[in-house]
Length: 302
Length: 304
Image 1 (tube, one colour):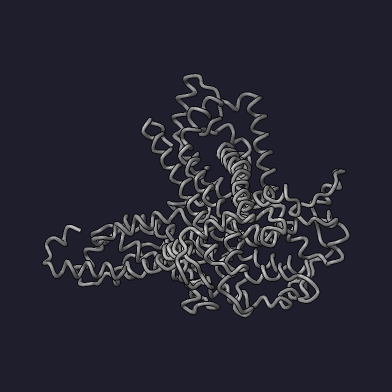
Image 2 (tube, chains in turn brown, green):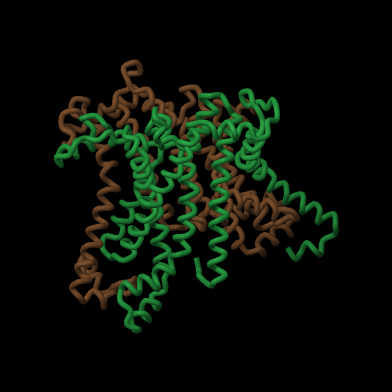
């Protein structure tokens, strides 16, 4: 019954440029068919490279060379996963990445959250200036001045540590704006009540504001996870020892050093790519409502 | 904040201090990670450096030296070439996808999730994957597609005329879905009554699209337009990964990539900072132009 409704959905379409009354005419029915066909083409373009990666990663090197258009490997040899996992030492890089991601989530929430509560709700005298300054840097991502940043990190002897990677996410204008917009909607009376009870601002923040802000915290955490998982520029500069590499840095290094010396082959690289992508896709499917729902106010990220 | 006025002065000061103590950690991080490096780049651009240590003030010498580098003119031209291609390819496609998603009622979930999926994957992995797809050898995927179509193989990323459009295609492939969803949400906020009224007045679909849809999403278009300009001007890791640092002939070298190489391969942090400041100035000028334009249009009553 639901299928049937979906099939005849055009008859009930009330919104948009074209609605049910237009779709009575054949030319618009044809146009609709063209639109659906275009969407299928875009879908195919979006999915195909990932599908191809999946197929190629499971092929043997000989199979990869023989027939490019063979869109299914002879067998899904799960041994290949284990083989690639061990040869590239993936466990270390996965653990490093997870350590980075956890630190990033904490920093992104606590520092941007405190800043947003201070500037958005408490508004002490003089804080408006910094608000303008933060808004001004919203358009200019930190990557622009990554070289002086690296020099400053080196000066503080933080090279080859995760510390700068964690704290870099504590200064994010995008997260800040979203926190601020959310905190401003929290009823002031609740804050007043806690103040009258003698609570300090820090206590109010952790005991009242954060528990009331679970939706925005969740959304920021998802965005921070995905950003930190794929973060490459700063980690690539900061992390020097192979044992400290995150997944992205390692993938870059495998890609750059493929050959007989390292023993890294193209099929190994593809399998490593696939292994690094799977958690990202998993996160996306679990949280796709939050990710695609436009639940963030400043959701314009180019 | 009404209650504060009823508190004595020392309470007010205490409250102010408590508020600032929450703000300061975040401000320190912004200083260290965002404002400080920019300021540091500005200082280094006008000084001579050894490693990253400043050893003397040189005024505009770094800029003179930078402008005389052949690599700089290449990088500047390439950066605008990235911008041009990106506006040509990457700007229109998300609008089209957004419109298609808004106007269709079948398989909504499939299309939305599928087309967004590339945006959920890290840029680095995508750059490596596309480098593999653009393999210029006879076993490369796209060369085999060409062979199957009876066409001659291409050099792909090794072809200086193709490399920038191909990198832009890679960036668009990743970003288009997410941008399309922003347009979709703008399109869904259009009041259906507008369309109804236009229909009653006898406006055809094209007139409706022109007089209702376009003005309604114009603010989104204009914001995404300027954000895209800002982000493409800073193209860096795609050529860094896909052409191993801009290619031997510098055909995909961007300004930010040049800045990186000046600092880390040439050991010239001062020149590198000068390049960063040049890029920053271009972005700042373009952003300023945008805001002036928007203001001018708003004064005339256009909602952009």
